[in-house]
Structures are given as C-alpha cells and as structure tokens.
Image (cartoon, rainbow, N blue to C red; front, side, top):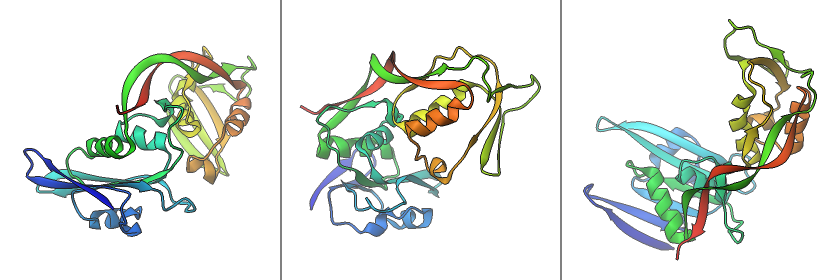
Length: 251
C-alpha cells in the first residue's frame, strides 16, 4: 500500500492521500450513513472492486460540522472519463482522453471537508499521472436534426402551459419543453457531446417509453434514435467547435 501524508496549509489537518490501498469495501457503501462513518480526511482511489455490482456511479453525503456544510463523495466502478469529469466538475461527455489512457474503472472516496474535488484532482495527478484543462477544439459530436418535418410525436405547447413531467403506464410525459432541454441528459448517457441542429424554437409536449435502464442512465445510441424517431427527429454524426476538458499526461 502506498500512502502519502499531505499537510493542508492553514487548516492544521493531515490528509491521507491513499492510492490502491487495502481499505475496506464498506467504505464504498452508497448510503449517507455509511459514508459518514468513513474516517475523516481520507482520499482513496483504486481500481474498482465492484465491476459485477449493479450499484455503481457517483454518491454524495452532506452534513453539518461546527456550523458548516460538509460534503463527502464516493464513486464506484467509474470509467476514467467519469472520474476526471467529477474531479473537474465537467460533463464526462466533454472529457477528451489521450489515446493511450488506461481502460481501468476506478473506485474513490473523499472525506476531506474542504474542496473534496481539489483533493480528487490531486489524487488523479499524483497516481494516474493525468491533469486536464479546458480547450476549444473541433470535436466529433452527435447532432439532433429534423428527419420528418411533420414532427409526428411533437405537439406545440400552449403558451400558458407550464414545464412539467409525469410518469404513467411506462411512459414519461413531458410538457412545455424545448428540444434543446434534452441535450444534457442524452449527452450524459451517451458519453459524447450532443448539439441541437433542428432549428426548432417552439416549446413542445411529447412522451417516451421510460425503462428502469434509462432511469439508471443506461441507454445506447440505438435506443435514443428509436425514441426521437417517434418525434420525427434523427441523430447524426457531426463536428463542432466546443469547449472540451482535455486530459494530458503530467510531464
């Protein structure tokens, strides 16, 4: 086990920055009570122990300590792009990894009360040898485009209608929303930048089949294309100038 003790200046706190350690798997239990029981001032990152577990992703726990809000965070079986996106507070779809980036998935836990994301960045830099900065570059994207001008699955919303969502009989009904409002969700699930090139500016009412897999963020491009095809839209490869979080090796 490799362990580095780092003194946080001005805080009189010793932070244990631990890489690939033999820590308890219980530290990575995804509920607030368990996360609050993990020792304080700890930063752990390791190859995942939860590759076969259905419970994976990002989890936060918030509490009050000495009158201040304290946030703890953990991740289970996270791809490298998701891990770095979490540390830099950026959508994983906008994380540009180097071609030789490791394919490993990781677990992490941060129980430092101040700037947990900064401590996660430090762990990524020191152990994985990676850092990242925002750059504008020509990027491969997926573009929403109109395939059927009749827009069979979209109904123009009444001007007085309010934005709402309602789940009934296996379908999610959305009211008074713009097509662009869907971009972030689709982007997060497909892990690729998505742009709106439909030219549609109205508010619409529409619906889609909503499965448990979709609720967990498990959706592929074919499923997205099937859903939006019902609305008269398509999803096509394209390119665009975008701000991307470009990951580089530390020299």
